[in-house]
Length: 96
Image 1 (tube, rainbow, N blue to C red):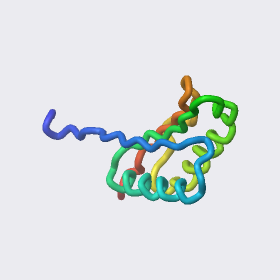
Image 2: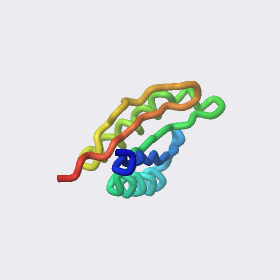
Image 3: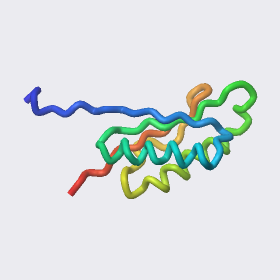
């Protein structure tokens, strides 16, 4: 039974609240690759210093990513602020 158990691999992707369009697309492509490989995705926006004022920007960024990755994975946990990080989990969809 133990030999048939699959290990859950968690990959992390980090954004800043003011992430530019090119950087966003670059990281989104990595996220797509991770989900296609069957890895779980932990996406977070890291607020440092006074950037905590842009909580809404961070949440919009995460929700936009979730919407664009909708066909590859589903959101396990919606964006939640924990200290200086806003995290969200995405799990890959089962293959037919």
